[in-house]
Image (cartoon, rainbow, N blue to C red; front, side, top):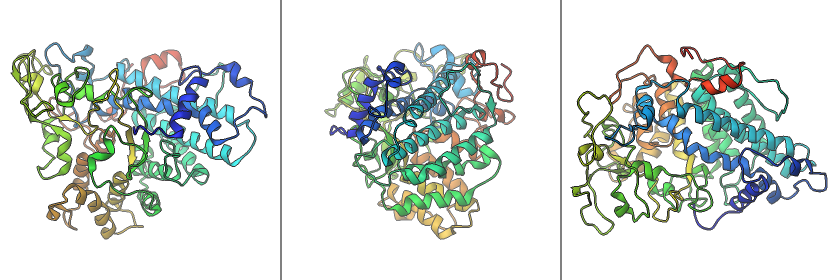
Length: 520
């Protein structure tokens, strides 16, 4: 994030101290000591108490990122000789052969429900504070954060326990149908809109504003047919228009600027972001996962990257040469920071987007030490590597929701049948995004005949790589079961549109019911 740290960021850090250096565990004695005289009263005091709710969000870019991305067509994490086998977990993600004991499946569940529990605990504390406008806004913000966490979990696992209070009793919650979770999320967002802040400023950065709630509602309604069986296209347009017409946001002229290490509250496009910082808010390690070892010399890093994650050839082929979004990919001859050809272990580093050649007898291992296996696959640097990274942590804030998504959601909803928008509005919305991508070639913009649902699906791939939308998009468009790089089509396995309830969670709570199709 930008180095002029916001008040929120400092209060979040204080919140961590108050919480005993934990995002999910609280000092019971400290909180039970609150009285009417000592409850938070100022906005800064409220933010301090709510800090753990926001620091929990950093897990979004860890296991949740792997869960949502690892099985989609935007990425492949092949075994590269002795590298990246990791017990076969990336192979299982690519082939959609995960189980209820899969590490990423289990860890993401734990993260999500720890975050939800943190929200419930903070709400239980603040609900007893004296009434004030600040209290009403803070409660609304925490409820919206809880709704966001529930949305993420509902999108991934479907049927969930619905827990809305901090209860130390022994009764264990049971699984609720996905449609019921969907209804809860919508209700929480709709009911708390009025109490959310309308400002876009450094003070509201990384906190849920009214416009984030509108954008999240548009996202939830966009997938309503998947989640609850009934399409809600008109509501997608309604909430998209609320964001667009607010006038608070505009597309960044430089597409990649909003993802750079110095991104932050001054960016005009993001609606909600998660702050990261190399020293004070660690956890953004994406640059290590995607870069080749030798890219240390390219980006002047103090550590060697891990040379793992790359994109699949078919996904790379979506990007035309004159699309500015293609600049997010590293491929071809690589260079040092001073412009010299990059060499590593006496090998010239030429990244081959198509070099996925399987070793004999393997279905996922593409090679060993110095051969092409380590050079296969274009690498995504949308989140530009931070040369000031420290202890493997980069400072790029992570964008969760931005205006371009709102424009494309509106266009898609109209194409799918929304009656509170017309074809002209859909075309205008889609071309706001498309026009930025092709500033020097207006002929590449959509026309009335070329703007189809297939075109929207492709445009979302081009625009939102590594923004955790692709799995959800593939499911909504009926593409999740399609063949990928090594994975054959699995048309009969539509149950894998949901991940299994983790075995560990069910062992701890026998009231949880496994999702259909999974046997354990």
